[in-house]
Length: 290
Image (cartoon, rainbow, N blue to C red; front, side, top):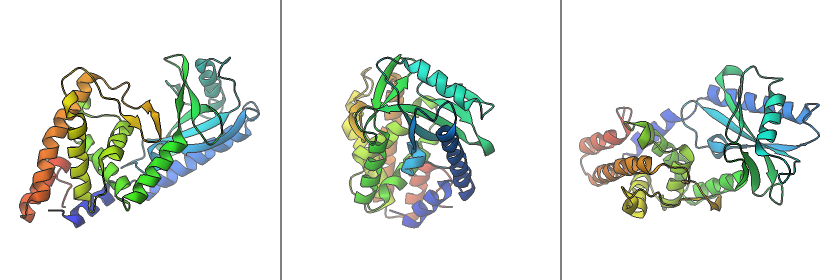
């Protein structure tokens, strides 16, 4: 059964609270103002905008981090990625006690527990198009398209009458219930998989079944082969979001998908409300149907 009210209640329960949203908003607005007006940074600064699950409205529970893209005027052909990250970190260290130079960003601990990831970037062509961002570990600039990702999510959500964003949230919650870290893909990999497989669902339950069965149908043949399929970025198809997914972790995830797809289909097809709820709880835990 579709158990629409149970799914609606679960989605509501995993939404970030108003306080989490307010804290995130205050934190990103503050750092963006600091970068825009800093005496050392403002000459290179062009603009900032939000990225990641916070910007795509696919975050769940407490908002773990907020991604801020900072477009700067820099020549990537003569500027090493680590140099840009080190400079960005030195600027942010004026305002934050805790800063961390990461692979492609600088993380800072802002007020009220909000972690910000500041990603310096420079346009490939136009400011509103794909961007080059620094990859410290690979020592190269890599292409990405955060605005394309946001547009892809917005368009898919509109095409699915609002189910896309909510099914992404449900699938993230399902992932978080899995028994081992190896089973749990990064959020944007999972979001990309949902984007490719959700179809046009009429309910949350159908959306979940579409995604689980779609992942199994599309990628099940790779299970245990030592290879990971290429999964295009919905916002920039030339980028493979699964590039760094370990084959063993992929197989661990796919094993969970195979079992979950069978359970979800049984739950959807069951005509007994109690039995259907019991099956859905196998996927989403005791919080489902409370």
